Length: 401
Image (tube, rainbow, N blue to C red):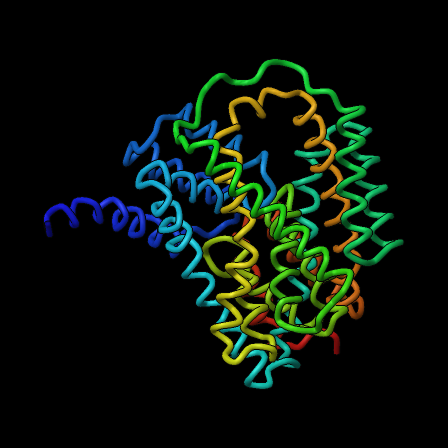
C-alpha cells in the first residue's frame, strides 16, 4: 500500500519540485518564463516534444489569462494529471506571491507609503509599462488597421475611465477583428496530448460563465463586502488578453476608484512585481494582503490570488476537450487578433493615467523614467535590476525635489 502511494505521489512531487525551482529563478517576464520551461521540460527532462510544446503555447495564447502560468498548468497536467496542473501552478506562483505579500505588509502596515524608494519604483514603472506597450504593439499591431484600433481603444478607455470602457474596447476589438482581420494560411495539425472528457469541459465552462455573470452582477449592484473584491479579481482574470501587463489597467480601475487600495500603493506593488521571479499575476497577492478588509493580510493575499487565477483553471478544463476544433476556426482567430490589438490600447491608456500621472511629477522624474527605459530597451538590463536600482537611487537622492 505504501509503495503504491509513493508511486502515485512521486509525479506530483516531481512537478511541484521542478516548478518551485522555476518559480524561484524565472526572472524576466512571460517570454523568459516560456524559454525557461522549454529548456527545462522539453530539452532537459523531455516531458514532451517540440511540437506538443508549441501547441500548448498556442492554446494558452488563445485563452485570456496569464499565458506563462497557463502553460505551467498544462505542463504539470501532462505530467501528473489535473492535480499535477495545480502543483505546477502552486510551485510557480508561490515564491513571488509570498515575497509580494511580505512587501505589502511593509508598505501598508509599517507606514512606508511616502518613502522615497517607493516613488522611485513608481518612476521605473513608467518605463516598464512603456516598454510593454511598445513590445506588444510591435507584435500585436503590425499593420495600420490594428494600430488604429489600438489608438481608438485607448481613446475610448480615457473617455470612459471605468471597467465599462475597458469592456467595450475589448468587445469592439473582437467585433472589428472578426469582420476585418481575416487569418491567412493553415494552422498546425499537432495535438496538445492532454485529454479530458467533454462532460468535465462543459461543467467547467458552465461554472466559468456563471461566476462571470455573478462578477458583473456584483459590479452593477455592489454589496461593499469582500465578495465585491473577489469578483473584481475574478473578472480581471477572465478579461486579460495579450500578456500579464494588461492586469495593470484592469485591476487599477477595479480597485482604486473604490478605495480598496490607493493608486500609490497599487503602483508601488506593480514596480515590486518586476523585481521578483515568477508571474506578474502574483500582484494580486500583494493587493489582497494590503487591503484592510480581511482579518489577516495573508488570507486576503491568498484569496485574491486564487480569485484572479480561477478563470484560468476553469477555462483550461473547459476548452481542452474542444481545442482541436476551435483552433481551426478562422473566425475565432480573427476575433482574437482584434482583441489583442485592443488590449494594447488599454495599456497605452494606462501608461498615461494612472502610471504617468502618478509617477511623473516633474522634469527630473521624466528624465529618470527615460533613463530607465533606455536601460531596459537599449542596454538590455533585466527589469528586476532596473527596479532595484531605481528604488535605491531614489532613496539616496529623492526624486521630485
